[in-house]
Amino acid sequence: MEYDVKDLKLAKRGQLRMEWAARFMPVLSLIKEKFAKEKPLKGVRISACLHVTSETGNLMETLKKGGAEVALTASNPLSTQDDVAAALVGHNKVPVFAIKKEDNKTYYKHINQSLDIDPQITMDDGADLVCTIHSKRKKLIKNIIGGTEETTTGVIRLKSMAEKNVLHYPIVAVNDANTKHLFDNRYGTGQSTIDGILRATNILLAGLNFVVAGYGWCGRGIAMRASGSGAKVIVCEVDPLRALEALMDGFQVMSLNEAAKIGDVFVTTTGDKKVITKNHFERMKDGAIVANSGHFNVEIDIPALESLSKSNREIRDFVEEYTLKKGKKIYLLGEGRLINLAAAEGHPAVVMDMSFANQALCALYLFREGKSLQNKVYSVPKEIDEEIARLKLKSLGVRIDKLTPEQKEYLAGWQEGT
Image 1: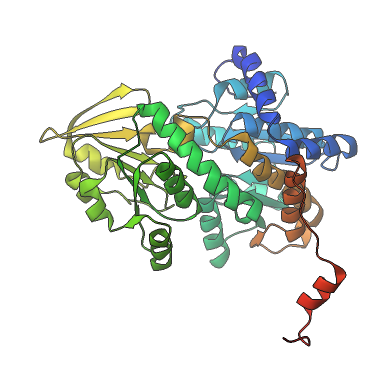
Image 2: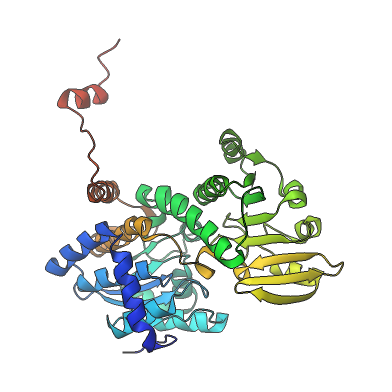
């Protein structure tokens, strides 16, 4: 078995971390038990490009229990937990190609190695697998049934491909499942982003001006958690509806040019490039902290920051101090990559439980139905989304009401008036 991980001696510690995460992933555990008995994915080859964390490790176990042959690579050079990568290789016999802090060349080498199993299904978090296949490994397309996509940025890229008729196999947008984005994106990103910032800096958020660029589900979660820590939250948006929503949620709303002058901490979460630029760096005050929680490291214009600086140094793990030519200092966290995974452990397992339950069940859905689908991006089937929500509520000991036949008839009809 080929693999490329940092150190297999880390496997025991990684296995313990996976066991701990599994305690908080009851829905995926139920799916794993069912897969182990029925082997519904027997013989299916799955290449996965995901953050290599303890939660992902449990997803790989689930797919393998279901009979699949899986290969895993990282979807971000800084997101790999090296001990989990070692555990998957050493204990679970899953080929993993991922090392934390790998350079860009190694990152794409690893992506290609994960594709060498000639996959029938791809799992993406950012669409790098799909893009690599479509640009450099086109011969693989003939055997691919379909793929899944985990994150907002990836879904945007794939929908663009579909609209331009250059997407050559169907994709299920796991990110768009209600049991994913309403919880993973909002509560997971909110908590883990704050966790990453605090681990990297050890600052006190209370009383600080905390600027959130982008008020999608991830931005909402970050703003909520920062506010809960006592920070004065400022939201910057380009969408008037989201800006109005942020205002109604009790946050200050202003342009990034205005916020740059008063912000203490800046977090981007837009999915777009060059959100914080040279103009903003020049306006920031001495000691400003800048971080990114969007999928790719393009939201902060790092070359612009470098051009303004006379020196830079790593002053703490995942904290780079840039000294500008006039003496002002700006602190960039996690190389501008996902701060919640660069400096922390990513989302809590309790929310990844639902996200990865979606991945597992959508892989099965694609295996069974993929050949009848067109080359476009599909929503997660409603029955999968609702079943995961039911299982999650059951695992938490929560019961909800059911509509009576009379209530169902009333909602479905139009004859009955006042």
